[in-house]
Length: 181
Image (cartoon, rainbow, N blue to C red; front, side):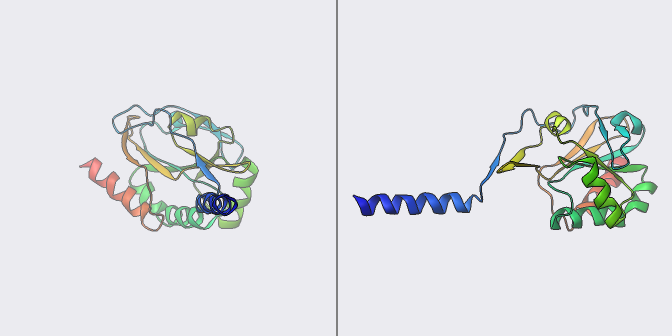
């Protein structure tokens, strides 16, 4: 009996370790293509309010990411920055959203010289409004990596629930080009 309990403890330990302590909250009413994009106002790295309505008449790439200055998030952000002239030419803006603070965004933008807006959503109001799952690791919370392409008329035209950070910017630009046809 003692041996069986010990094996059970080992199995439970392995299962817990493989999960890395990450728990995802189920997305509530995830926004889908064809829906009107929920409006929002959040502070940017400039500590100024940014609203979706500020970009009426433009394509909006609203991308959610887990954490400032982490490897995957840095690759994704640098690729958006690299393609900024293409977004400008397509009448599009890029808005990044995470649960990080304005101060965290300021530090990251100063270090990596991003010119697009990073929006602070520590209370996950916009994350929740778009139905983006939130993962927890201990006391830390992270938004899942997802992107919403919003048309100049304010409709969600494409949702990427899973993102490959290496080629995501190109995918978004290709989708904007195909939607314009």
